Length: 302
Image 1 (cartoon, rainbow, N blue to C red):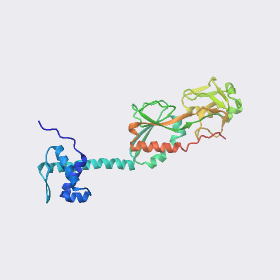
Image 2 (cartoon, rainbow, N blue to C red):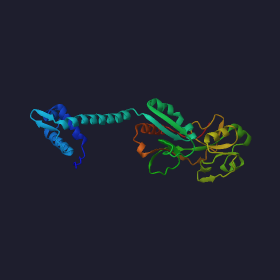
Image 3 (tube, rainbow, N blue to C red):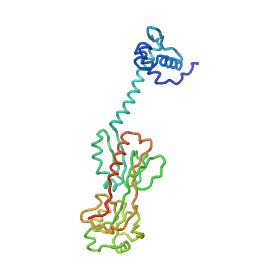
Image 4 (cartoon, rainbow, N blue to C red):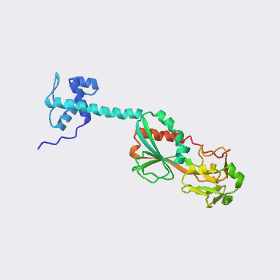
């Protein structure tokens, strides 16, 4: 029964090829700037691991035997393949490429993300971007999602969640609605108004100085999308609670109860730990983080 071959050190193979190409241990030692004894020791370790000699080492240089010649050609091929693999990774680090699938809710896409996607694609021409706009909570593995922008806390040990910013909220109504129904001066006066509510949104809890008031009024219109709620506000249906993105309101909207604060919610960018090292994923994550730093929530609408 043949003796099992021990683990081969790739560096020993590299030194072996270098010695053969140089023609002698002395010449290889000069070219590699390493001691001749170092080369001799590693060549011996390589032959010991293989269980056979590969060359004769004499004063006139090295002479490969039949197995050594075959091993030399295969070793060259392996080292070239290894270098190609290294070069491929380094090239991708310099120029990220490939397909990224990103999931985002409609309001976050409209209020934040979509304003920056064209710039990202210009910066990284070799990246393909597939954006899934959906208000449901996706399963990143089953849906093949690389990156997700999600509101609220994240409870998953397998993902990395990095906070982008807090989404702040405010009450809005059209000028036409306020002209018809009047402007409320306290949260309790909202009970006399038509309210537009996102049923999976933040509670209507208002804070001002040391006072907190929770409103649980009957809603005229209920949905699960802030963009639709915004359309209802614009059409004069009632007063709606909307995120304070830069494009959250229209020119004829009025801010309602601007002095009362509403609890915001954190927005996170999420990706699985084993995907964070992928150059294209890392490029998009860092890009979104940079843009998030520029987000400023306006305190009032004119």
